[in-house]
Image 1 (tube, one colour):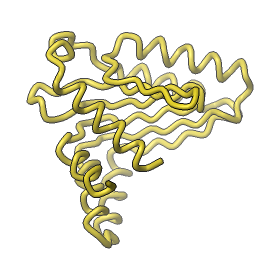
Image 2 (cartoon, rainbow, N blue to C red; image 1 turned 90 degrees about the horizontal axis):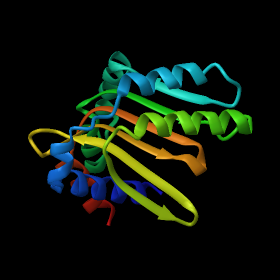
Image 3 (tube, rainbow, N blue to C red; image 1 turned 30 degrees about the vertical axis):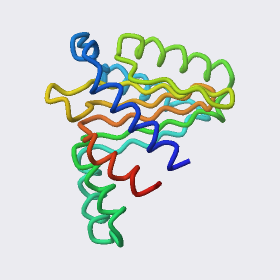
Length: 172
């Protein structure tokens, strides 16, 4: 699974950065709306949310640097270096009407964002959204949305395409 996600992210970077229309479109992920949606549904039973802000990420980075045992760990740290907030939502255990409502609202927010890539495998769809940075070497505010798995992953900040490529190379 880790390898699959890395490959999807690399493909997303290649598609998003290499696409001239994505730069011209200027359709950014609305991180404020997405964070508000998560806060609203975090109150309901069955919604498991992990949210790590700037201070938390700083502490995680310090701890991870001290315990990084190999090159892959150090490279993973470099990937998250430009992030300012991470939100992970798992709502598989929620009531069906709440799942449907959350998925609909998330899709509504994301319809205004640039879809970098869509991957369909075994009846599941992985949608990756983000904004290609003006320098063409990073993706800002990357969102991975898997409605069939009731999963939303928000990586707010900048992620380097080169760092993802290095990790994918190590995985293969």
